[in-house]
Image (cartoon, rainbow, N blue to C red):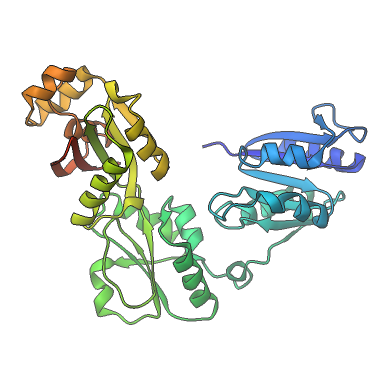
Length: 354
């Protein structure tokens, strides 16, 4: 995925520096220069800094400010949401002497971005994150590099604290995950060894970081990193309330000991594309949802000999929605939970085949 950045300056020299950075920075970059202080013909001109930043904040992966840090702090402070959602924020002087990672250093990638920009302008990256200063691997950086969901940011903070204070923190991976070797390889590139999750009770440690889609009982501090390993196929009666669908989905996940954070997407039949309840569930869980035609759903029904409902087939043209949709959306993955029926709702789970 290409990252998108905005570079915003307030002085003539700043606009020249912004143009230089834009030429060499990886990703899609747009330069913005203050009205009357623009020496870069490629820059878009703005007059109101606060209005510009308010517009850019939810749209870009990072904003590089070439101006005083105080101006930036006052401008972005009303817009901050959470470290998992805020863009990377970089602040630098117009001579490029210091490149400060101000916000979203790990999850947003500001630390990496500050280092990259410092190399471009031959300046000094200013990074204050404790784990980076001590040259230790932070749990949230492992999550970012392995493309995993952080289940609890409070737990992430606690495990980072244990790490910087020299406590014994071990990393474990669920050996049943289909892409476990990929996780091991990418973790090793960060000098992190992933032990098998089945060894957790046999070892001593002050805290653990665990990669799994299962929910497990623990006593010591544990941070769960959730792989996008599951797809939920959902069928529902027309007009079904979103809260009822979400309650049923939560029940299925709980009964199977799985985490909602491990859902990669939802899936259903295309006649449900305008189903408000289903769309609201996808919105609440911040998940994409795939819709398939009756003809597309027929393929896994025949291939995997899925049980069909004649009533449903008469209504929408296909007799199995949740299982067939889950299989298709999981790239022909394993159906780990067959159709579970609730009042007007059917749900199935498939494990994604990477």
